Length: 511
Ligand code: NAD
Image (cartoon, rainbow, N blue to C red; front, side, top):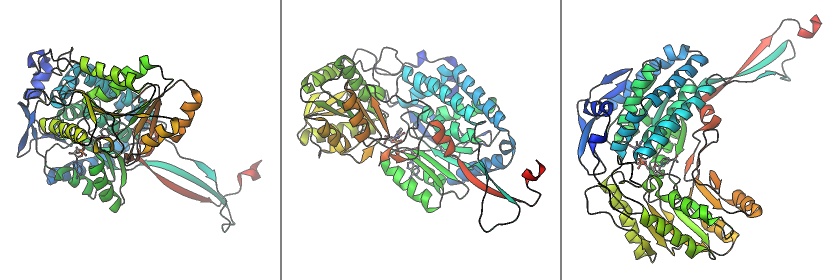
C-alpha cells in the first residue's frame, strides 16, 4: 500500500455548481417544495472528519407530510399521466443526470468518501442507463385477456382481464455505500410502474437525493411524486415503514435492519422488498486464467473500499494455486494508493466514517486472535480520515467470525480447497447468498458450480457485473425481492382481475 497523495479532500477541486449547492441550507423535499426543518445535523467529510454541511432533521410529522404528498400525487396528476408521459419524464431525467454529472458525483464523493471516478461511473452514468431502461417499461406493462369457462355460469359469455396497477406509495430506504445509484434503482422502477415515492437516504449521504429531486421537477415529474426525507434519528425509517398510507417498502441495507423492516411491513400486509448484506465467495480453480483472476479478485474486494454488498470478501483458491493467488493479491493490495477521494490518482479513499473504520479494524484483530494469518494491511493511517489499508487474512477456517460475518470494508479472508465439491461446500457455508464468482476455463466445472452455488447472482470469470436487464437479489439472509430488470418493475404493480359477463349474442352467430 502506498500513501503518496494528500489524504484530505481539497475543495478547490470542486466545480462552482457543487460549491454553491453545498452552501445552501438543506431541507427536505416534500410536495415539490424545499421544507426547512426545525433542527439540522452535521455532515462530515470522511477524508478528514470535518463538518462540511448540515442536513435537515425530519420528524415523524414530516414523514406524514411526505406520504400525504405522495398519496395526493398518486390520485392526482401522476395518476392521470399516460404511460408515454411517465416514459418521457424518466428519459428527460436521465439526460439531466448526465448534464449535471460532475456536480452529482462531486457531492456524492464529498459525502461518502468514495472516489470521484466511481461515483461518476456508478451513481451517475450507470443510473442514467437504468433510468432509460426503466423508462421503456412504462409503456410495456400489460395484462392478459382470456375467454373464461366458469362451469356454473351457463348463459352468455365471460371474458376475463388482468390489469397491472401501481402498488401505490412506496417508502424507499437506502444505504450510503452507493447512495445515488441505489436511490435510482428504487425510484426508476417505481415511477415506471406509476407509483409515487418517499425516499430516505442514509444519514451521511442525503445530498444527491435532494439534488435529484430538483432535477426530477425539471424533467417534468409532477410535485409530490418524489419526496425526500433526510435525518439521522434512528426512528425515521421506522416511521416510514409504519405509516398506514405507505403501500410498499423497498429497502436496501443491512440484514439486521432488513429483518426488522420486513417484519414490520409484512405485519401490515405491505408489499416489501429487502436487498441485504453479503459475504460473497470468489472461487479460483486450478485451471483459471490467473492473469485475469488475480487482479479481478483483488478488485472484487477492494473496489469501493470493500463497501460493496457483493464484494468478493471470501476467497477460495485451489490448493495448487493458492499461494500464487495470495501473493498476487497481496502485491496488488500493497500497490494501492490511498488518497483523498477527490484526487484522480487515488486508488482507494476512506471508509464512510471513523466509527466504521474502527469497526472494520476490530474485525481484523478478531481474525488474528482466532488464528488467521495477516498477510498485509490490518491498520488505519495516522490521520483523522477513516482510512483502512487493504487487508488480507489468510488460512481462515469456516467458524471464524471474519468468515461468517459481513465486515463491509477492504478485508479479504482466504482459504484453499482440494476439490470442486469442497469449494462449493465452503462457499455455501454462509447465512448470506448474494453473489458468487467462479474463475475457471473448464465448462463442466463451471456448470456444476453455477448450479450448486446458493446465491442470487453467480458470475463466471467476472465479479459483481450487474446488468440492468438481469434481476439482482439475494438468497438466504441476503434478501427477498429484486432490484433491476422487469422483475423490479412488476414488483411495483398489483394485479386486478376483472370478469365481464356478456349476454349479447355469441360472436360466432354473426359469421
Ligand atoms: P443499514 O441497514 O444500517 O441502513 C440502511 C438504511 O436503513 C439507512 O437509510 C438507515 O438510516 C435505515 N434504517 C436504519 N434503521 C432503520 C429501521 N429500524 N427502519 C427502517 N430504516 C432504518 O445499512 P448501511 O450500514 O447504511 O449499509 C450497509 C449495508 O447495506 C450492508 O449490509 C450492505 O451489504 C447492504 N447493502 C445491500 C445491497 C443489496 O443490494 N443487497 C446494496 C448495498 C448495500
